[in-house]
Image (tube, rainbow, N blue to C red):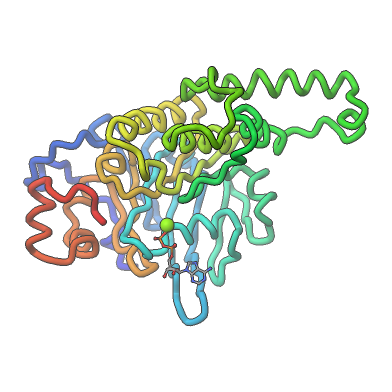
Length: 315
Ligand SMILES: Nc1ncnc2c1ncn2[C@@H]1O[C@H](COP(=O)(O)OP(=O)(O)O)[C@@H](O)[C@H]1O
Ligand SMILES: [Mg+2]
């Protein structure tokens, strides 16, 4: 891609001449620094990238669903991936988690090339995800859904499990305590015994995040976490995503259409359109990028609306 698209432009919201009301991540003190690879990461993560995608691409038949995707995420960064429906965002997550093997390019996770890894191996190596459509075990309790994530990480041994040896009970006690601790992040510990399928929609979305966290990821991928949430749930989710990053000191990469959420918590953002990155930058870089506005909205009238703060859901 053209160098200038990915280059950090030291423009504040004020410098662009736009009076933007959204509180933005960069105004909270997280500055991005450019890397020689045409990416940006937060200054505090300089030299510490958790994810590097190099010329990543996949074809479905004749369709280049993702093409020349170059993106880096810092170790404690909240990064965003946005773009119109069908742009290839979920496909990027499917590549990162090896649901699909890339047709081209490389994925480096914490310094290790994941080329030969399977989905479970990538999970072990530190990537966890939630899905665009909720995937929980509805007929299991909230606690058991979280324990599935924990069991993924710890093996107390087959024989301990079959014969219920002391080691098994010790592990079970640890899993129980840890599950409640994780649920507490979203104030859900009191719902531990409830069936996951009977939770309200917003709570199911939160539970999916807790289950993903239970695998002790280094990088958490959230695919449209605010979809279907009301504004107060979305605002709470935003705070919780930030809290997760702060408490667990992990990287989070999210796909989201809610621009208040994206611009409010993401540090580096990449915009995909027809499988290609058309812009990378800080929230204010992205919001003032004419190509981005056009990709989302297409018309001058829509652009004017966007700049006046209308049309917040860029869909
Ligand atoms: N398994 C697949 N087989 C064929 N085409 C696919 C497959 N998965 C995704 N696509 C296509 O790739 C493009 C990107 O899809 P997707 O990544 O789901 O977009 P987004 O998440 O940005 O809305 C779409 O045109 C979609 O139809
Ligand atoms: Mg999608």
